[in-house]
Image 1 (tube, rainbow, N blue to C red):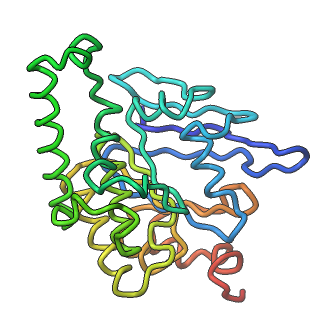
Image 2 (cartoon, rainbow, N blue to C red):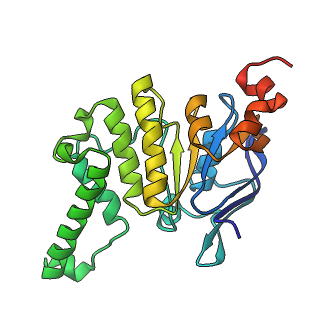
Image 3 (spheres, rainbow, N blue to C red):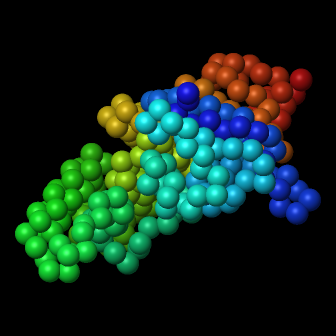
Length: 258
């Protein structure tokens, strides 16, 4: 079965269908793009998959040790524990904590120390604490943030805050990473660096990435397959070459004329 399967997913807000009968499949170690005009339902779809919203209809199924786990109705933290992690359009860091502490909080959500060890500060507690700190610093080093480990997150430049948010998502050891407009607000140089970073993440971490992005050059350059949403429905799906040549996509999203 696919790593993640979305079947006939629908979300109604009153009389409005924000997402309607969406079907998608994600396999291991794929880099998939999700594009569409503003208001097409892209972030709503992310929110349905990651438990922020509950579907009105349809299913979200995750392969876990060969078994299909239905994610409908599960809380976001439970879905994160199963291996789905995400970033947001608006950066959501703990801005008054250090860069290192932002990563350690994410790691500790997956590495819960026993109550007795924590309360009595047994040797195992300090050993685990040091191991997590080393892992966090190693992860920051991959993203060239190790020298900023003791800086407050709020003091990082915008592009580095974006990178830190990705580091924090990766700190949970996800099977699937959802990136919601990671290039938003970036200048061309920062976007070019992000493009290389996304490639590096997939290569080094061997995970599946689902990317929402308005920067078409980034999407076309890094994604293997692309889904196009319009009015909450899948308008098209295919390789970047197929999507660029699809007349319906050109009409609806790329601004061309038939």
